[in-house]
Image (cartoon, rainbow, N blue to C red; front, side):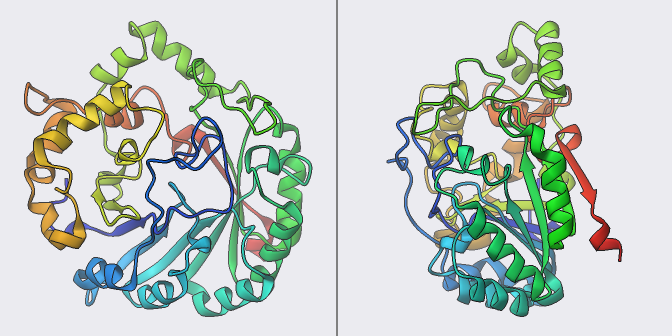
Length: 357
């Protein structure tokens, strides 16, 4: 993997575990639709950013990506000062948000401060009558009001739309609205999270959220026909790391450095402590210690830990009794099935006419 910071071109940060929504498939939400009790409610601080970005003072990153693994950075009380500080260390910045927090004036200021470096991705899964079914607690009209303020102030905005059975019929209308409002791109994402029939995702009203049958369903069936089951596929598939290919690493809201945004999730999941994913994760935590990747303790020296130096890549395609394969790696970066909604066939982006004018 990356043995020192000179290889890193992009950093993905999960700045906070705070969020104003309760999306049922999110790791910060438990099965009973409450905030995950195993989730620390915390934020990265300005001091954290100084530690993170110090190596890139003279050699800027290509991109800082603020993802929404567990939280929405717009909801964080430490956002403004860290945002302004970090702009000097990167050529571009990307913020992913549900867009339903703050007031229009705040979004206008964000566009003015971010200028040409910043792109904001608004995760909007439908229109007024559907977006809230999965994005529980969202207000579609407020999202559009905020996005409009940001775009009118010169901000670059993208619309991401996760396809479900309850909203797929609105994709064309959502794309037309995105173009009318001035979004530069419209992306339809397909998720594999619902392929496990044991996973029942329900809203607070008890309605089951279902994925629409797509190529994901077909690809999943194809994998199952070649292996005993999905766990067998994970254990035996060849692995090509998406983040290594992209020269990217991930830091979570608790200042832990992980190989990718999928990797550290089990540390905070409340409902999956007895799965193979958790068992695999716990093995190397026991081997290297709970704090082996704590950047508040070790800074970038965490990269010198054997886990990053040897274990990770060894476990992909040459595992043994010590360097055991990590379940998350086989599931997410296995070559025969695209699990992530952000890559390959599961990611369909269109550049809108607005962006070409």
